[in-house]
Image (cartoon, rainbow, N blue to C red; front, side, top):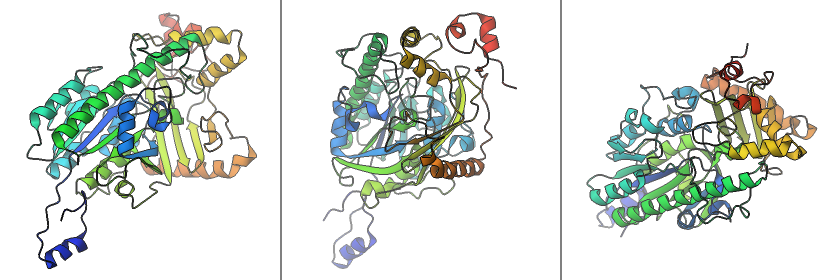
Length: 480
């Protein structure tokens, strides 16, 4: 008689012994976590994106459990990944601004699984690029920017390793769909690709969107290569999970606490445990992945971290997890200096922009070596004659101190209800809840970098990208 994978039912084991059967050892499952880079939840077929080709993601969803309400801790790369790998929110682990590292003394992902007898390996962008060496993986490789050889090398590693004498915890990170996107749309028609929510619909935007779609399909291809090797080498009982570090690089995605920035795909296939083609509305956070997979591996999650195991949701014994989801963003160098905090409870989402006197800017509207500005320039041109385009640009740069959204009625967060009497009770409650949480986290609300001010005409618009060093210096001065 064979126990279902992951079962640790003491009564059943005792019954087997009493009846004269030898109780089989329950092997710890191999665990594979695949991480995409800059991918919003709504941009893959398991979440309803009909225009994007993601057959491998669809196959994984058909085989496992799709989470409709999975969130990252922060909508920028380094803080998000540090939270994943420590189980701690940014203010507690020390990685708040992009490119920052978590505190050296904090226990990190590999140590938990090594203690349970696992070999723990990383390929590609798992931590934030060259930070991987700080985490204590048994081995890691190809963690530089867009080192796309990481995926075939991960496949080669699996095939050379074989089943192995230890269970494997393998983390694989693709750089897709992080910019720069492919030079051509690779079979996508720009005229039929729907624009990102809140974006200005120009030809340049559609072309960029088609190139982004090509990058999403490349991420799907990478997942397919790894999934195939996992099933071939590790067998049908390995747990495979897919997720993304935050939303895609569009004006209201990455670097924002809007849903497009912090709500991410999470799909888990654990054969014999997760029900095929199933979905859950349970709210979970990226900080919960570490304790959850430690539970899967047979360990006891630590009470010292912020994350909490949702293994019950995987097993189908629980249909809820968190009552509230908190998110936090500080900034990305001097490109994006815009600290935000957010909380979601049920249908209500509250965002606090800590410094509404700052102009919101990012790689999207400021020039950089990857040439991301092209489509935003088309927005500025359209805004000269189109009030809707002008309004979109204004909303991008100028944020109110508080934002409140009813996600049931307004899933794309277009109507701020802070001044609406219908949202007063929710607003008061979420304000208090966020205040209490920030205090419990020891959140110092630090401003990292040199903010651009709304009162300075060189902070955004054409003057901000003039290339004039003095204009850049004035735009980057600190707020009083």
